[in-house]
Length: 301
Image (cartoon, rainbow, N blue to C red; front, side, top):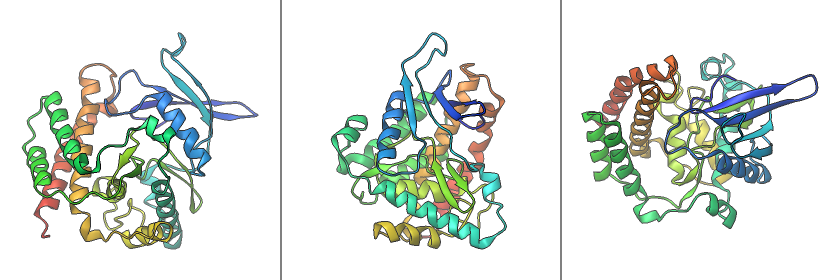
């Protein structure tokens, strides 16, 4: 199946059923979870009423697939960002963005329990951001790239760290492209391999960052709708409304993170771990992402 830039998704279909097999790609990104971890998470999320595919079966690496894999039910809808951001019906876009806000609030409302903390150890809130920013520096060192804009942005974030909210379960890649839409509602939320305990503003910033608007920059919320409609819907379920002017730090963090991932993806091709034109071309995103970072840092507080 199309998509699955880091993992592989295979459609299993005949006249009676439609299933999806999800397995490891030949190479991956270090911060991505393994398939058993993702399987157990999806099982727990489904029990909580979150709109995720129902998982059916997990198996350790087999000789046939040479990878851990799991099978889940196929859900219907559209994920392609370039299609969703071009929906012409304004009222339909508003309904979609409101449902996306509702769904994210429900994810963030999931209470910590032993099962979830076994999957994802809950970090210390006080040192949470420092560890995240230090990890960015380590990742840049591993990439052996000289990227002054990224290094400057990381230093800026170190000097401008906001107070971290209570840590919640964050999707980690909550964006247009990983949210399946059928008609005017969310039919499924995909790709949970970056899930962790974090600040809710990370998911909000990732979804509203310029790099995930697919060219529709006037629609801050995922290229589909307005930030106000998105956050108002989020607040209806969570009673928390985060104004847009508080998001500067988190948008910088989102762009730095995506820039590093883009270079890691390109490395997978360069090292011939996974020869792919799509992966190779991710390197060409880096200058534009750095321009976005500079634009953000140049804005007045």
